[in-house]
Image: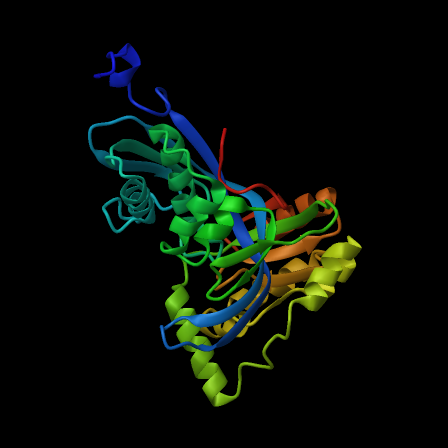
Length: 315
């Protein structure tokens, strides 16, 4: 027997109005880089940390898939199918078996090629926004599975918080520790650095024996997080890619020195750089250090932030 037609059968699934998603930047509290693998990636052992520097993506219904943007990178960032936002939307549509139709608008604060995973963050935002817009109803773990094919950092930015990353960074497990808010200063550099170029420079420095000793396990960093003491965490921060970023951009050395001179407990290059991040003893210290760094002229901008914060979320 044929079922009776219902009016809702002709209604689209998902949200009828716009969906707005906020997604954070990430920093690496520990970034240990292993040797180059056969697949062209390096084995990583890292501790991710999501901080309160956000991009926002708004998704609306449309009869095609389009992307517009404002803010950081406008005029520099391609808005065609090479963009991770559109690649993420296509990947979700293919997985869920729905048409890839949406009008997407990106409001960007995370700098391009800054070592803060801005592109990965935007891909995570697109997965969460389009899941809500299209009513695909996927779990966070399912979205993270799609994310792993888009980029090593994308799965973490689906979840956020603080997490251990292994493999090429895509295998993510949350770090269980008592809730603690850490205060940071983000020093944004002029221009970006290509992540593949920084990896190549690290390989070159290692071949020449000038890269320094590689980081060990994440045990010391994880123990520092459990102690909830900024001074202890400061002593445990580390990044194997820092030597390569400094080799390619020597001026970052002046930024790191200026942050520590302003009272930061520690400074470190974020990921592949050139952004530098500084750990502060508290919120007021972070605000003061940001003001002093901006005045010192050693970076394009300096912003106080805190973490950990959630990953991509509908707001």
